[in-house]
Length: 283
Image: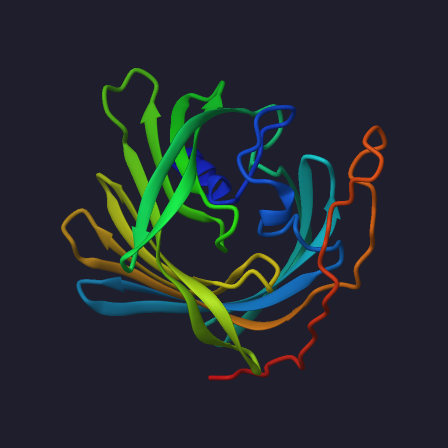
């Protein structure tokens, strides 16, 4: 179960398979589209419940920094500080490297073009490129497809994933994520920016989670707000999690060739910079 959940988190990243068909180009990736050195700081509050009663609450402040962008991978640095029952716990700084499709180590992702399909969002039709994917060589078979619209941020308008253990006839976990609103004004620190709202539902025999996200392509990592609720198999509330953006910066643009054998290609096109005082919020 823990391995399957980790794979689910990895697959939430827009991505491509190394030397394979592009799933999402780097300029539309939530981290690879930003210059190295860009960062964000968020506050995550998680409350756990039992029989409708609040058991505990934990507040975690995370600073995530983009350390490196390669041809087919990113490196993120994460610094975390948590507070539980008035006690503060500082965690060591860690670095995480993943492929731009979220894969780790020797994992491979097979990406197959799936034609085109229209999606409707609030009555407006969007023609999407459908791309099917499968994680290869894992005990749990992970399959899915994304609906990509290159002219409409946040670019992935729908995702579907299924997790099927080896030998099983049906998936043990399913996830569907879809954009429900586009181009909506939303307070991002001291500014009003344009965001997309995304609803995600993940179901398994043990748990169902429902998540709403606000995404803005001007902010590293895209996500500027998250509201997640988890229920157990009986439909009872297990936990609530909210994520609030505290601060962010888009680093000064550095034009670095994407590869040495493809002259003239550069990996970041942004030339803007955002910096706010820590703790400033438009709420």
